[in-house]
Length: 206
Image 1 (cartoon, rainbow, N blue to C red):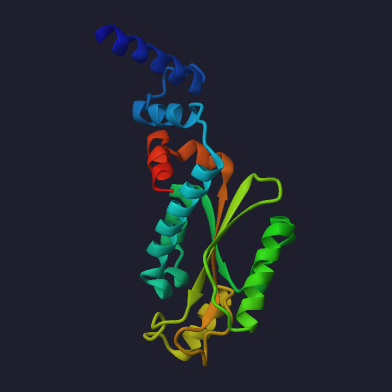
Image 2 (cartoon, rainbow, N blue to C red; image 1 turned 180 degrees about the vertical axis):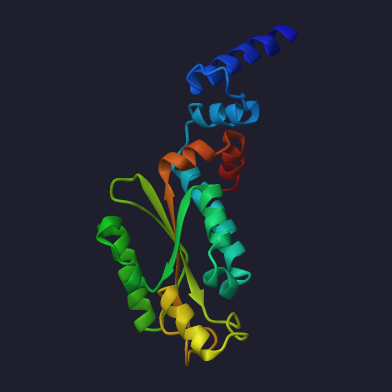
């Protein structure tokens, strides 16, 4: 056991020195180094596990932001914090405002479907779509009007709607669809951040 620990310590130290460019004047952060090594380890993730992991993290992100929607849209502190933690891009907007050629044909067609459902007053659901080159995952979740903006003045609600690129929030009734959460995941970062043991548990739930 002692020999095992010693060998791994030497390997870890060597990796740290390489990372620092052999600059002995810099202090080695072993916890950060261990985290980096774990992220770089080879992982085999099935398509089902990818989707399950994206779905889990996306729900955590959106649920956290939806608890105090007005506050979190007015100030980006929590959005920025979650973006850094999960290495994602978080956006809001109406399906039309979220359209972007860079997202690719498949995902823009999903946004078209959301817009069609909104115009026909049809139910909206969560969705996960891979990018055309399969390097990204797009998670979308409908934002429906409840009582999130009751404490705001009309002028504040109008300004918030424009900032968040949502459909007009004024004169809307409870239950109306006003836009989407969009969380863009990088496949590369999902691999780096995922825990193989947890992925097995996610697979078992499927």
